[in-house]
Image 1 (cartoon, helix red, strand yellow):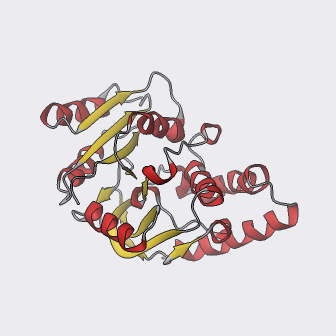
Image 2 (cartoon, rainbow, N blue to C red; image 1 turned 30 degrees about the horizontal axis):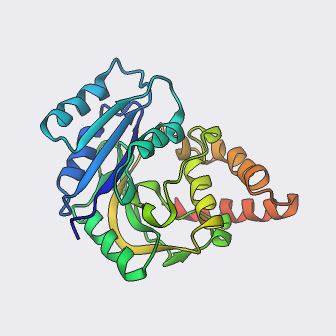
Length: 257
């Protein structure tokens, strides 16, 4: 199985504090045939994050750094990496999250078993500094469709892998910047070329709940969520209200301590 290349897409913004641990989690993968494309999105850190990545890239040619010339948000940074990706599979890993050592192997086996195009997994929620588990693991549903995705999005980017030989390279909507861009990405994929995505119940990723994260404050996401339903999905006012209500209720219980 290791003969197929996996391209790992990693956008980085102010990632100096955590990106080394993220890279280490990739280096420890039991599946060895990968390339990691890290795109620094004009981080205002004096090049600290870039330096960390450069040090790793000098030691391992599978790690590739691209410094974006302009700040494009996570959507634009991911697109730069996808453009450069050469793998059969494209996986996503944010610059502060951690893969368990068998993440890639488990996900590719799972994908083969399900004959799936897109798979994702369950994950732990950890404190950004102590890495202690602060919420119980989020166990994903076995399958999602476009319709179920309108109610709630269980696909966390750092758990997702897709087979680009079946649907081609898929690019993010850069108009979304860094807000709900991944949600729109999955919606588009499931609306067009993918009948359903499969969720692996195994917990394979550690997700840092950062206090500075945009999505950590759900109030900031309400308007973008509404715009996705109305402008991107072009739902009627009443349908959009229904799905926004579903999202709000499910999100409340998802992050309840």
